[in-house]
Image (cartoon, rainbow, N blue to C red; front, side, top):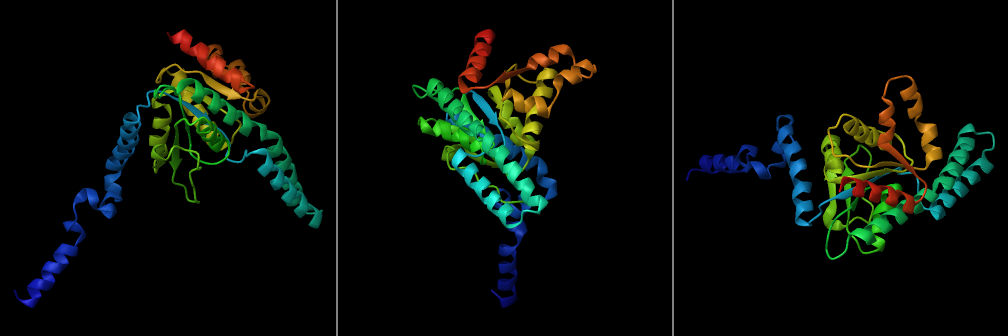
Length: 280
């Protein structure tokens, strides 16, 4: 074969067009392939969860910044040390105030861990996979919930998301049930697809986004009727005034019944159990 033919054949074999489509990562990343990527993010977790016989879930949301007490105390100690060095720095003053508040909120880390431990021990018996804990897969409250399931040798799911800054899954998720998403929409779908309850611990924008997504779907009848539990009434009454919305007529009075409040793991689990008995 002439040399120029060999060169041409080499270019053909190396050309992106010659790659098998489903193995061509660059091709799959093209804007025109968005629909295919969305379908893959729908199907991959669906297939894995079915293979693990996960029939129903409980979703736990909450702040990445609420960590266990010992770590929160170290964070406060560091903030106070910086303030001692720069007592007139308003940012250092602010950091101490925030660190003190987060130290107080560290009790919610323990509560999320205890709640997941309680639910997982009660429901994942005889290889059944009901009421499996699902979190966003990150640190803070999400770590606590995955950790609680791990404490009793139970499975739990993490639905991680690709973000501009580094986002690592916490180490307590069942390894075969940790998923990484590109699209928030597909991640939200998998949060609620099998959900039998949603428990929202104190959190920020992400927690509020996920909470109100579920509330809107419940309000409009577009998803299954599930308990939506706000953990920590004092925190939540400062964050959102739902009674004000009802008084203003922007939501119906009966919409207030979409939410329950809990202060302890036992109380949250009792609310969920009452909801199950009401469905039966």
